[in-house]
Length: 65
Image 1: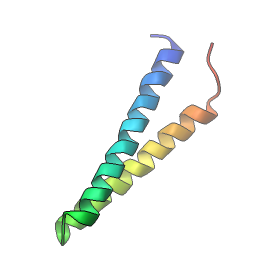
Image 2 (image 1 turned 120 degrees about the horizontal axis):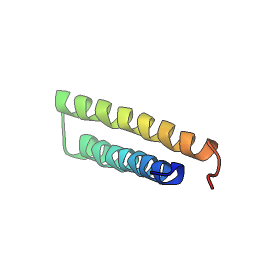
Image 3 (image 1 turned 180 degrees about the horizontal axis):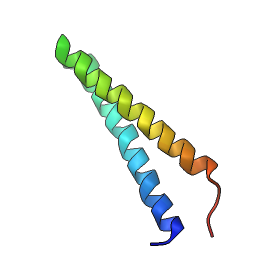
Image 4 (image 1 turned 90 degrees about the vertical axis):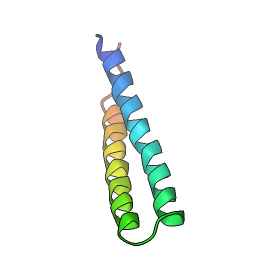
């Protein structure tokens, strides 16, 4: 697998983490209450952080040929 394809799959994983974070934050704020909302919110913010780190890595790693 080439470096470009590997970066594509890594960036798709980062986007999945960000979309998952959006869904979990909406779920925890509007549908859940109590300890379940806190647990889901924690996982949402962890996935938001991971997705952001992955996307920053892809953007700042530069172009591939």
